[in-house]
Length: 112
Length: 114
Image (cartoon, rainbow over all chains, first blue to last red; front, side, top):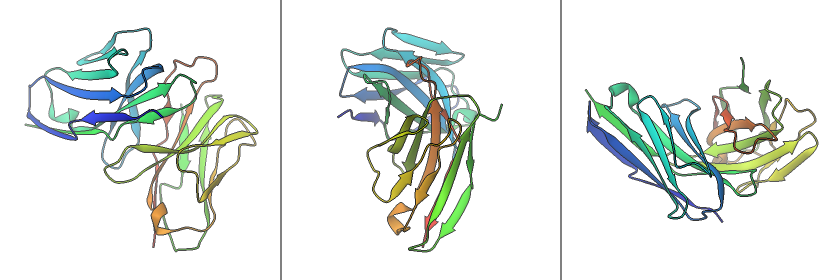
């Protein structure tokens, strides 16, 4: 059974700092790994998707990496802004291709 | 682009009442999912469907039922509401053929059972 863990559970940084969010998964036989953003009381917004054959994906100030052999993914946020404050969730799609397993999320606060 | 639409956004139920959470997508996605999110926790899969007429249980199906009569709609039924079902419910969809495609989520239904 796939288990996904995110560390830290919460993070507070000053504006402008570069930061890394961590995601680990127990079953390396995944199809893809997806990062989501969730604002308080809102739904999930997809940020980046890394296919199993890829090492990283970039979108603006966000960069996500994937190391299947070690069961890890990281989300790098450059030059953080207060608007980046949200909960960030990672989710692994299993090798059967039909289900996502979510981590518990990292709650990020960027202080002005 | 409506995407995935969930109704209602909020609902308060009394113990033992029943209700249906509605989910509709207009992207012709074959896969649809229902998740629940408890405070401070990740999302847990309740039920999913790989196409019209096909449904399957996820991690936490007890107390829920689903049906999938059309590609567009995937309603979630609570028959006898219990306080343990207080949660935020999310519906999601994804395409069939490209298994590397991401998911699209609805904005959620916040349910309180009192």
